[in-house]
Image (cartoon, rainbow, N blue to C red):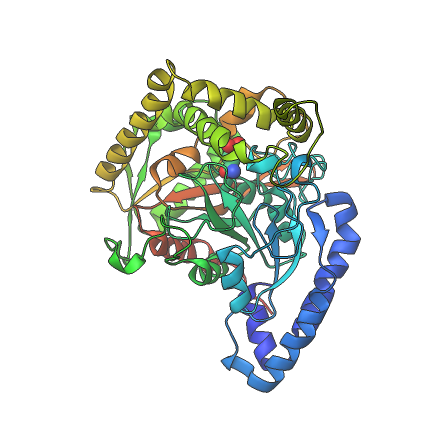
Length: 474
Ligand code: GLN
């Protein structure tokens, strides 16, 4: 059931938070031994549910917007008193000492956290195969990955355990798993949502966003977690921002030249069919040029390792997390990091340290940041003639485990998503259709990109062309 339906039933009294949480725990008990979406399950969520049920009895519709709704939270987001591992050995037993702002806000709105979800270590990856605690399987086909890095959050929703989960998106980690698991995944405008209490990967890229089954639910969650936060100086006040209005209809740009290479034909077929639907509904479709988008991956895989190498310097065996003893201070650092970090994390730290080092900084890091600025200008220019940009969310459907053993081949998964984080604009992935493989239907997502601050416009188009087609829930 969606959040909207649960809320309605909770207020009516025909279904209660007790029922919802019991259902969640039952689904987890039945399905998670195989799927492995969860790293931890909070059995005490039942106690929260008892309180929420009583509150609905007493206050009905006057209760907060998300009261009693079960939520799963990606395990790189801090919940006070709960383990926060980032799916890394280095934080295996680490317990968070404070709530992230997004958690505080969800809590105030009445959400019930039922567990933490699996991810690629420190959110680096596109398949959850980089988790130190084993991968998550895609509920649509367990021989395939759920996407990543928020693969656990996506699988938790797709297997029907929770109506919603929170993920983080640095280069596509909410949108790509949404695409692979047949869900809605939203990446807000940079600064719309506080990063306080998110484990930093790329601080100039990271945003937290919802994974849900409808656009309306994603919007509900976003409205709860978004807004200025004194604990994150990069947060923006949407009221003081140039307004991106909602319109009756939209002009939608397709960057045709960008969609030529490396995309599976079956994904393209779903994408073209989606465009036809838009045309039939009267939307104006135009071709646009975004030549610099093709440089997105190259820029991303320089800037991101740079920020990763800096952000992960804190895991040194001194402050918290794993500590491996050694003869000297340097020895402790080296042994702790060698044992605590997985291969992909180490690769990025090494690469990032290299591109930031004297002599290479100007050649690599400064150049990547310059490309980023030019991409922002290019995109802003495109948005003077179109309202939205449309691309596939990912170049393939969910792939099988081990299919992308070489790092560059998996980085290519991010081709359509990273330009969004590089430029700071918002984007949403919505289910566009399915590809049939044997007896399995594999979902394909389409991605809408809006101008900076255009989060509401994305919810608007999403509701018009996706939610509107869904059957009424009973
Ligand atoms: N797949 C991308 C990466 O590995 C995106 C990760 C993310 O958004 N956290 O960097």
